[in-house]
Image 1 (cartoon, rainbow, N blue to C red):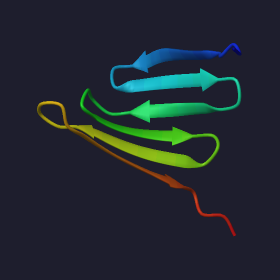
Image 2 (cartoon, rainbow, N blue to C red):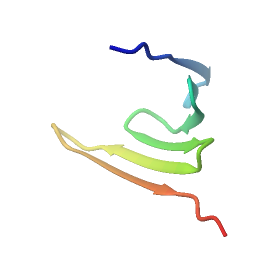
Image 3 (tube, rainbow, N blue to C red):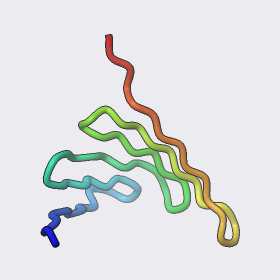
Image 4 (cartoon, one colour):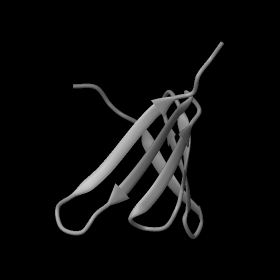
Length: 64
């Protein structure tokens, strides 16, 4: 079993900086709706719906 490193720091209300061993990301948005931008180029949008439902989509930044 390997060790993992991840920490999350709240910068402002609705803004969070997440730092892991290989990358960092910035999460923006209020509770229930979130947009995340990663240093690896991944962009994720998450929406929590009423009840046990949620919707998430993720895409990589296009490179030439």
